Length: 62
Image (cartoon, rainbow, N blue to C red; front, top):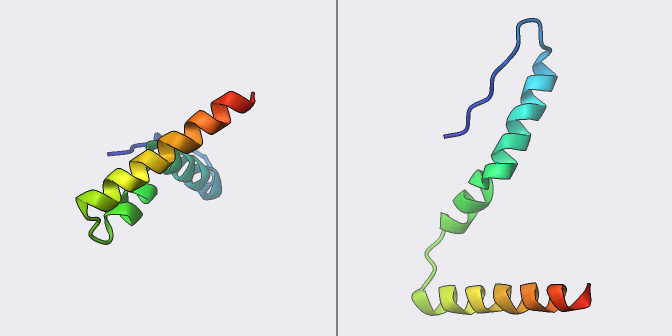
C-alpha cells in the first residue's frame, strides 16, 4: 500500500502530486490494468520474451 505524509499547511495539489508520483513509482495502475483482463500463460510468455528482446536491444544501443 502506498502512503504519503501530508505536511500541515501543505496545499492539496502538492499532496495530490506526491500521491500520483508514488502510485506511478509503485506501478499500481499498470498492475491494475494488466490484471483487468485474463492473460493466458502463452500470452504471458510472449509478452515477457518481447520485453526481454526490447530491453536487450536498448542496452546494445548505448
